[in-house]
Image (cartoon, rainbow, N blue to C red; front, side, top):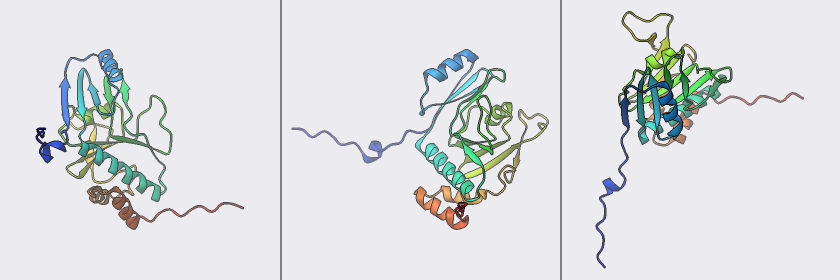
Amino acid sequence: MVASPSLPIAAAVAVPAEQRLLVNGVGWKEYVILREALDTPGLRMTYLKGALELMSPSRAHETNKTIIARLIETYALYLRLPLNGHGSTTFRSEAKERGAEPDECWVLGKALEEGAYPDIVLEVIETSPLLDKLTVYDGFSVPEVWLFEKGKFSLYERSARSARGASHRYVKVSASSLIPQIDFALVERLSKHTDQLTALEELAEHVPAPKAKRKRS
């Protein structure tokens, strides 16, 4: 029997890179049909006035968005912040000609009602987006957009007016207005851990865990 040649280790464990594709001239109904027909967690769609971006996230993308969400939500638990997460929910508005699927999104102190939009969205960027995410979220009036790229956060807050020549109303800020207690430098550092349990345990060392409420007799 002739032994078949073995694959090189690098080829056997190769991880597909993140892929992005931009399609122009897509009508609203076509976008909705495509989104519903291709409803799979391995594909994200962003729609803006006839332009449709399709993105297949890489393993690094999904790992980063997961550890960041775990850190932010555990942080909120320790501080007893009323932060409700809704993952990668699809948001659409025919009137605004927009559709988006953030990596994670949250609302503060309330439930996310049907047809409503989140208070905060997180976008992890491994490869450069082909559509301006801030312009998309501006149409939904999302108060804060957090971008995570190359291990760093860029925080954007929606203002009442856009700067001259800008396509959106977001301004870059140094801290979140909605959750000022979050130390993003700490989250950045902990997100680099390859073991998520280690990251969460270290977070607990910096942010005291909440004390259990006593039951009334």
